[in-house]
Image 1 (cartoon, rainbow, N blue to C red):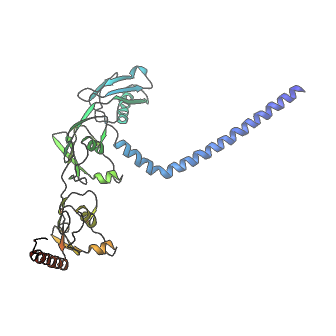
Image 2: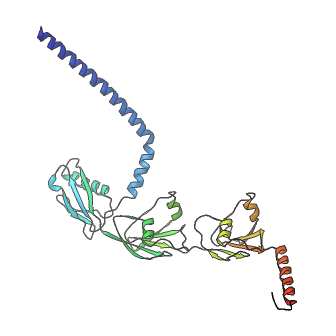
Image 3: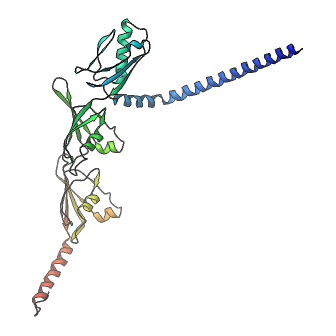
Length: 327
């Protein structure tokens, strides 16, 4: 009788375990389906991120120290330094050129060479243990132009920071990166630092030997009845109101209704546009955006100038008629 109960209990326990496993398997299957659907819906975004990361990945350079592991054969795993020609030596496959490749690309190349004659589906990993020091040149209107060393990888913003930052005269919308190519050729890239800082454009990865050139921006000139007429270097989108503010504001004799802007932006013709600053302040007129090379002219008010002249004349007469010579 006791044996009967033991057998029944064992059968019941086995049934419960089988039912639990079935429920778990069904839940896991549903979870996998849901995960696959979610992954499919977001696949384009994931791929885009991966492409960006891969394109910005560090490229192996001369004298870098690599740690290479081959899962199927421990004897093939080793630490090896890239020679001056960009090559490494490995058992079985001898010389492999890895300079200029990412770690992932080097893994694929080594695995392909091993699979060709020696191993079936080899699993290879490449880890960069030591980065060689690379050099970038920063020139132009930066605070500290010169040669700067960096290890691993450096971005354009980091290179500008190495150079002490931009000078006030810098044209940060057209920063150039000149890269040396094989065959004594060069390639020039142009970047907008404002867009990069606002995350509207990627921060490019530099390579050893790159030359960063920051040129001087064409200034905006303010003339006429302002407190501080002169030349101004303003970064980013600059409006007429901002330029007038940089010039210290309008003079007491200024005519705010006839401010002229001479620009060469349209068909390279020196067009003159007229604006009313009071209407701009009241929101009745759009505050126009200016461009490098524009000239702002603030004219004097005829009425205000007439009153000023009359006042000076009267003061002169009063001073001239004072028997004590006081003014």
